[in-house]
Image (cartoon, rainbow, N blue to C red; front, side, top):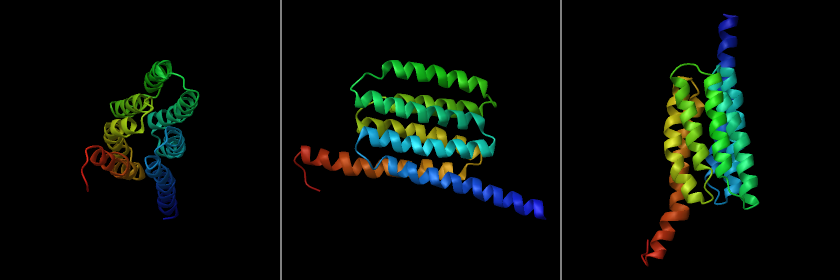
Length: 184
């Protein structure tokens, strides 16, 4: 009985760690500045690294670790008004190589695809483009999270999609109506 209780507590702790990552991810898309989006996403990715390690989902862990480093690199490049195209290629090669090294069957393809898509997404300076390209990223990661029992991860992707939708209405939809001379 004591072992079963310890396992339950361990699983609760794992999911609680994921919920910290969840909170950071939801906040990510409520910013309209590239640097804030990338740094908040980095913090969320770092928390999910810990959760995936504890779940034994090493491809997801390494992909989120790479994402964290990538987000910092992108933020610095954008801040200095440098092109990120070379960084996209470098990080894509690293993602594929580390995906091969941590291969755990076809489920690993989901984490690899999700991180490749987000690597492309975060390369854009325009927050509108970042948010739009984030939609397929969320779908791929939600499936990976579900398979790996990261329930906080699944909720993160669902709420991130909701956050992207809210940001669309805050930053894009209303502006489009104003630009077209329409009133709400």
